[in-house]
Structure formats: structure tokens, C-alpha cells
Image (cartoon, rainbow, N blue to C red; front, top):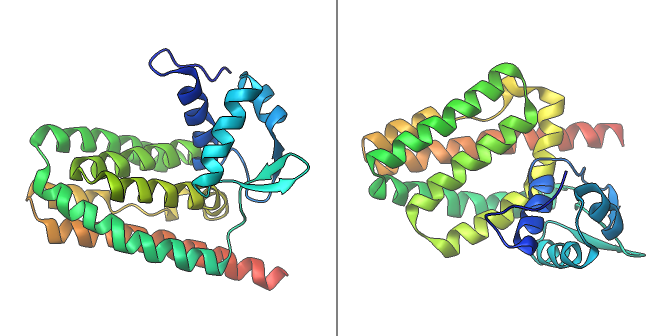
Length: 221
């Protein structure tokens, strides 16, 4: 598979390819990787891959290990507390604003994206769920037109995405968070408070699963 995309400059396409590998769990937390290994796996040159890794490290999605190796940081209770504190502060607010801004066309787009989420959940396709769930949330947040908040939320998702893949594999898709229907109803009613509450609950469900995962890992340690 190549990392090129005719709609983007090469370096941006490579960045998005590696970003998606992290977001959707193709790289496991704690698994060491190298620039050369990533270059070979996506069919890209070393220089743009190195630049993508530099960006992703600055965003908190990767951390250096030495010997030219990097890894997705392993999740800890402390990291979860910080990440979710920020998510609860930012994402429900963007949903509230989105409910005020949303057009009928926006809502129709979100319904189509939610259909993809539901299909992935029904079929038990974890990677499809993670990708369609990400698309739903960030299309919603884009409607809010709050680029600073969206950039912060994007960084938080990069840091939590790989761990959500592990949780999905353990508990199955039937237990994954999905308050999208409530969110869509709130947007249709242009009810910002209800949209805020729906996204808060969606985030909370994911947090509970991650906490279970950490508790199980602690018992085995």
C-alpha cells in the first residue's frame, strides 16, 4: 500500500497515513517501530516519514525510545485522567455549538456517517468502527467552527485511539460507546444542551471501558 493521495501533497498524505495507523490501532501501544520500518510498510520515503513522525511526536501520539525507535505511548491511569479531563471540557462544548450551527445538510451527512458506525458495530468490524466513529465526531466538531478546540481534541484522540483498539478487541463491538442517535436528535431539534449531554455520555462510556482494561491489567501484574 502506498501513502500517496492525489488530493494532498505527498508529505501530508504520508502524515495522514501514519496518523490513521495510530488512530485506528494498526500500531499497538508499547510496540517499538522504526522510521525505516514505517517507510517500508507504507511505501514512502524516509524523509517525509521522519517529518510525519516529528509532527506526531509533537502531538503526543508517539514518543522516542532511543536507537532511532519510537512507539505509541502505553496508557496509564494518570494519562487517562488527564486526557479525559480535557475531552470532557472540550468535546461536549463543540457539540453544543454544532447544534446551533448545523444545517439540514450537515445532519444528513452525520446520519450517513452514523449508519457506517452502526454497520461496523453490527458486523463486529473493529477497525471500521474506529474509523467511522472518528469521522462522525470530527465532522460534528467541524460544524462548530472552533479550530483551536478541534486541534486540541484531535491531539487527544491520537493519544487515546490505540488504547481504544485494545479495549474493542477485548470487549467486542457490542459494548462500544455510541450515543450518536441521541446526538443527532439533539441536532435536529437545535438543542445545544442535549447535544452536549449526549457527547458527554458517549465519552463517559469509552472512559469506563478503558478503566476496566487498566484494572484488569493491574490484576495480572
